[in-house]
Amino acid sequence: MAEIVLKIKEISKSYRSRSRTVEVLDRISFCAEEGRSYAIVGESGSGKSTLLSILAGLQKPDGGSVLYKEKDIHGLKDAELAVLRRHDIVYVSQFQDVIPELNLAENVRIADCFDDRVAEDAQERTERILARLGLSDLKEELPENLSGGEIRRLTIARAIYASPKILLLDEPTNDLDRANRRIVTDTLRELSGQGITVLAATHDADLASAADEIIYMDRSFSESR
Ligand code: ADP
Ligand code: MG
Image (cartoon, rainbow, N blue to C red; front, side, top):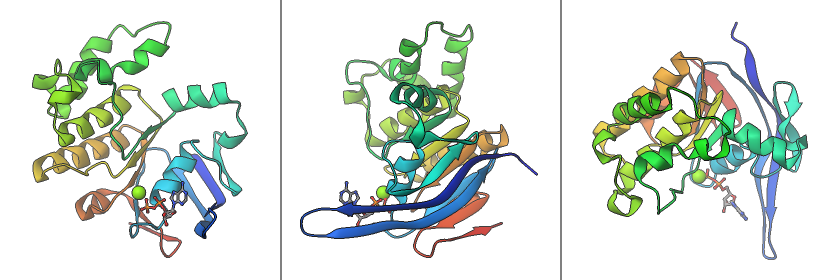
């Protein structure tokens, strides 16, 4: 059996504002295995983005824990968590956060700015990832000259460039046409084939059915294939 890389234990989360309390996650538990892909599926508002942001360490749950290599990620110091989020658990937001002054290829390689040493094959790896996502011809373009779908693929390329162990993606096929949805779906399958654990929140039936397992948010159970 494959190794378990992420243990999610009884995660709960509510949001409280002056006018309401929304109980979003109620004791969600599951384990994610190395090299397996998971689609997180559920109606809008069912807590998919909340769950992913907790798995990425961006916000703390009210209760429960997220164990990566037997360590609770929410117990790490900020600096440790920052390193973990650069190399191990990489998150692709639903929102398209790019640096407007950098061109597409520079945005993809942004992680190099934080590391002391750039890998020898960095250039070649960038080219390969850009080609896989159909972005080669656009590598020198600034974000303002790119479409929403091209920026979506840029953010996925940037996450792949970081060589994560766990890749978390929030609605990764939003804004994409059919051909590019297919490219992203196939790419995510290839990544899990290479041993990366992929968790993607999605409304896209094709992406969900390509995953090894579907996690349904509304009914708190998961189904294996
Ligand atoms: P999904 O990604 O499945 O659409 P979300 O996790 O974004 O669901 O949201 C789940 C619920 O939590 C929604 O009802 C949303 O309005 C609420 N919510 C999300 N973020 C916040 C927040 N920061 N403050 C208050 N309520 C929030
Ligand atoms: Mg969402």
